[in-house]
Length: 427
Ligand code: SUG
Image (cartoon, rainbow, N blue to C red; front, side, top):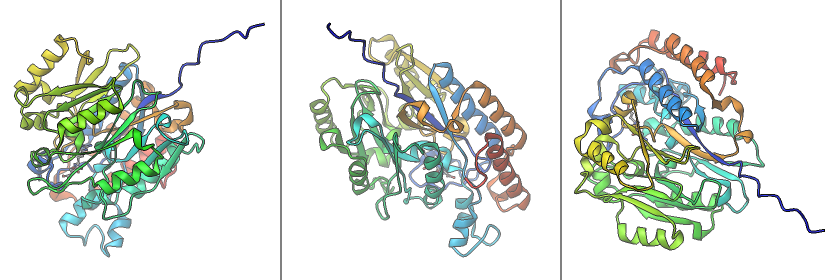
């Protein structure tokens, strides 16, 4: 008798956005040279409660699209261990060191790690490498805490391999400088590692040595990886990460004309490796690089919801910038691959240079292989929202960062959230 063939089972792999919950110490200390928004808002009063609630609303917008959503926890702030390693403490530290110990910058989960999904790797596991973030002092002490969360969330060793950081001096900023193109999430793709050289006096945060080491650690075959230089013009204009000027999803690359040092060479290499790649390029004549960076047009979540209509989740600022608003109208009116635009309000994060894409790390995986404490639905978001409403400070002025009462509030707020989520107190 001939065997009865059944259809191939659908891949259990989906793209999950893990958003960093905005921590209770969120403040504007102007710690990131080259990040124009951070410099512009140095000294301004922040609103941690509103910031965290904006983040939750963005996660709800993802859920409403039918996407799977995850979270990362705010890190312990102040980072007493880091201060102790500098032989100081919150009271004694110089203001810039104190601010670095208190930064809530781990909210920008795109900088948490680089992720290579299972279909791309030689051992068929999803590989994650925690980013060392060595270029900025306030971010350089994030990785040990982040690594603990990654090891907990992705503890299933059949499905995941979690790697430690690349050693200094090679700077690595994680997924913010990495893009993946694939026919669909569950199929093998091409991974693009974008590195920089300094531009306009600003540092390049991603070094090619780190990118290449990660591609080796993740066991990507050389024909699945491209190493592409970011343009100095983009870095000088304020694109301190590649995800400020380009984003990819499925077979689509959405990019500004001036994002890459050798645009023609890169596009040709990409097409050679993946002929079905679709490049949606925005010319400088339509949206000036300065407008793209001001509005964060490309710091969008480009996603494919279950209804199949590829969607660009943009910051509300894109609707207030004339050139980007007009561009988005034309984009949707045309018949390109991006079919829907969803604006979200993440203004508190934007003022520190973090848009919708900065706030999330994408992991292609089977949700059943992930620690469920890191996945959320509507009900769980409501519970998290209640903890934030109750415990997060309403506002913080940077000159009050040494105030012991404020420090106490910040530490109790995080503890309340950890407790609410049933996670270990020392995470
Ligand atoms: O590293 N801002 C972050 C913003 C990170 C955005 N992430 C991505 N593009 N993926 C940074 O520059 C500002 C902190 C301050 O100034 O207090 C800050 O760290």
